[in-house]
Length: 201
Image (cartoon, rainbow, N blue to C red):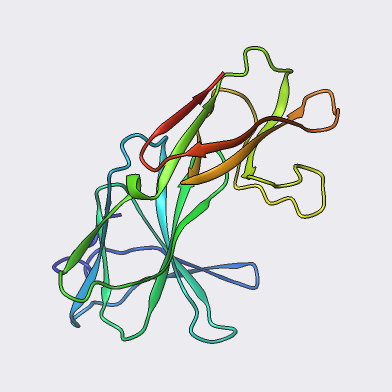
């Protein structure tokens, strides 16, 4: 959804807040105060998805409001001292990944460009010589794997040849076999670089 200083108060936006599992809709009032914001660029290598901005609570119990925007669109907010946002990539297939935390509004420029290719990378697993899978999982290097205590999946899809979007870093690749057998680690300590596609056979 496209926002700017001129039309921010005229276009109805759906602002999502999760409060105790309840979905809340907000229609922002006309904005007359000074506003600043972000434009997300550099994500042409990513699969279909959207960017989600989550307001970081300043105190316990505060609503975690969420805004969604698309690649290339600007989104702006009234200037409010001390408020910060977490940035998430929400793919159409897979699980949302947070790629930046506690981001303040720009101090100087009206709209700050945030390059997704400075934070996120993609893994593609062909799986030609691997067992049929019901899930392909990317987990941090050293993770014990699916089904084990302490497992923390960063990305998960239900088949091979589906792009897995994760923040840059080192990962292990796991598969959960379709026949219900124990999960297998098929690649270990792969490096995912921001802005690049890592292809695995």
